[in-house]
Image (cartoon, one colour):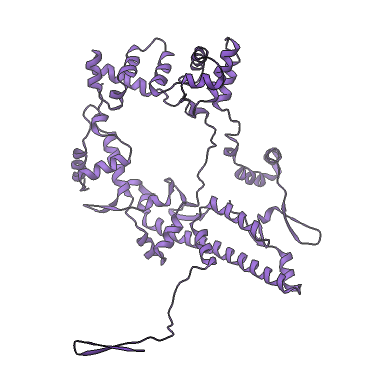
Length: 474
């Protein structure tokens, strides 16, 4: 039923009905979601993703170079894993073979010595237990010291009281106190301390001759030292400020976390996703594809799709085949997108590659999107979690994006301004360090007009303390 309303002399009729409307709408299908995921992954994460897809899809074969071929020509996806000791023997054999130097060179490039650099690990507990074997103390004290060694933090500190340790180990506090003294006499110096002050004092106590001034500063004025109030320390101890400055330098040379030298975490290396090489005066973009496994389709399932009369089997194989082909297309699209984005960045940041960080230009996702004809979100995904190796070093893609600062010669990037601030601070008179306002004035003389608070912000991002804490009393 339609209703009529009179509004200002006009009649408005409201009614209900069905109508067909044709319009364009983007729907995130599972295939499109997978394509976006593949684009956003770094090269290292992509390797794990591809192996996961190969486990879920029997039509996919990963690492085709390792596929064993059966007698009838069918591909079998079980790859032989060569032991590491065999790899090293083969590599040395190739290297000694003068008749196959090209193969030896290829092996030497593929062989990664960094992968074996941290295999033989020693934990802090193992190091301390080995030293306790040669300490002449009663056996109950040795067992108590081993108990304390097993309860140290990763930094080498003891974060439980002696009473708690004695109760847990089933011994008395006096034995545990003796055990702690034994533990603190071992290497690395400072291990077994219960706070930073005790850790530093243990290290200073090992020095000969004894550093009485440094010990007094750590024992009674550690907070003033952290705040760089050297004048107050000098007045309290009755010495000259230059003596306090030299003692502070000796204290800062100590190790506040002695146990970290034996941390068990493996070293993780950054693998660049893209290489930018300078060739004959031009920059060439090369994608790091050699660490990606090769993807192929299992030929046996292809024949099953052509020969099988089972409708359900054919439908399953068709679905898996379509998923595999879409993954291959997603990989190629990812490769092309990253290449185009990198080319645009190299074109915009040519001065940076030629002359250094001082010539880094401001760049936004919108700028790259306009240069490549891509959407901003696509550029964001293409640069997320990825690194590029350039003649200037290894950088995250996000390093090249940032706001700009207007100068007399045009806009410059925030990173170049930070580099200039660091250079000014490195060259300052340490007895009269430059304040943030003075830094702003010097930058203004160079044509970089920024406010004092912006200088303070950039300085803090660089991890540089304010002028009051940079002053030296030499």
